[in-house]
Length: 230
Length: 169
Image 1 (cartoon, each protein chain N blue to C red):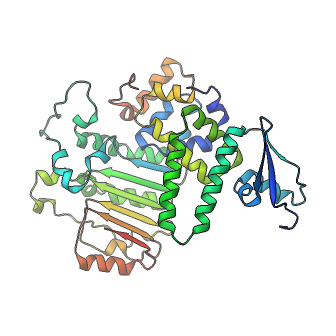
Image 2 (image 1 turned 30 degrees about the vertical axis):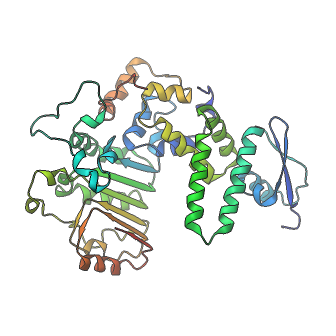
Image 3 (image 1 turned 45 degrees about the vertical axis):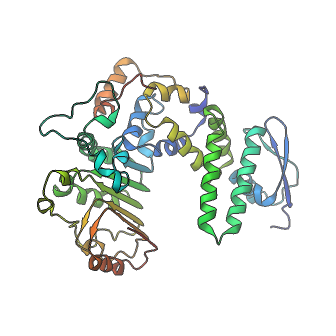
């Protein structure tokens, strides 16, 4: 199966494109393959901070309940030895990736076309989400941004305690390069962040709580929107 | 310029097969297009493609023809997009690891961006969720790190290696 001179024939640019198709955590892992591969990941054009398997945890809403794992507070979920990640605590997986996002972004060397971040609601409250958005739009000239907020807390806390909305500074998404935004599992109560979005062509809001007034206000702020998915 | 460029263009592969293709198809190959842009007076001699086998070139020509015809339809873009996707998936499926790699090298040499993106994502999907050893075998990579260097990198990116079974494939 192995083609001996595959790597030596492929330019870094092509290798970086291949690695761009991997989740960020796997892209970084390619550093261990060989010296040639050591720094190639720093030139990927896409970073998808999705801990292995989280996509699987967000299937269609009608199946969602059954996949929510039982979380024991203060300890790990018990899992059968040697089994795959479906049995590990996804919140822990997410925290582990999220904790390293800043370092990864700083080590990464070129502009990003696309970035997707899966996080827990505490990243939102701590201001990390806002910081990432600012960094990605200003330093990385990102074109497509996607955020997925893990909502397992809904299962344990009354919604009133979960009463934060997407409360970000006015016009935070108005950077010229940003063309596509996606939010999953957000409570979107404010339209302020979408002010002056003359740049945005695509907005996707999945499993989001949003009133029709807020949505209307957002749409009217985004003059050049071409696609809106809810 | 278009009057000096022949309508049909002949391409000659590494294994000495000649392919006669429509100009529009040949222009999908970035390398060939650049050649004609830089040599507008080129004769209709066959263009040698020393890095491309006839097997790869016939796949590439089929791909270019198909995507050209999709683009020509233009107005019903959503069904064309769907058909394009199905075609691309089939293209990946019908190639084993080795021939996929060979095709990437050819497409990279010929500079066909869309096709390269499709193939690269196909490779990424195949090494997704695989162990380091599996990926090394896949690419034919020799581990040239000393055990100390390897340990150092694993320590540096500890979080990314946590919970990865090194023997899994």
